[in-house]
Length: 128
Image 1 (tube, rainbow, N blue to C red):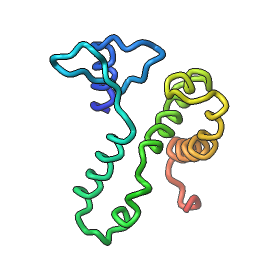
Image 2 (cartoon, one colour):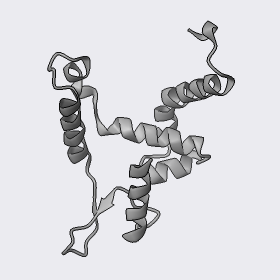
Image 3 (cartoon, one colour):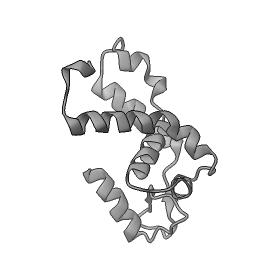
């Protein structure tokens, strides 16, 4: 949660416009805003996996190529939807084509809704 607040705060400080992504930074000596790129995020995700799971035979390490920045964007889309955002707003914020939103939301959103229902009604042994 703190990381999300920091990202939004940084975006506000750097005067990010509504049509720009919020993953932004600027060199201390520069004026130009720079945006996070998926290639950099992918490297950080893979490094984090290696550091968290040093055993090369661990399940996550064996499947490290499955950790891609796109997973984060789908999660962001689901959270935006849960927060009440419409497909057009999600498409604009994530820089997706409007017709792509339902495709990416189809699995994630339904799974989150099922988990949310289970959480709200409490854990039931019959759900196992």
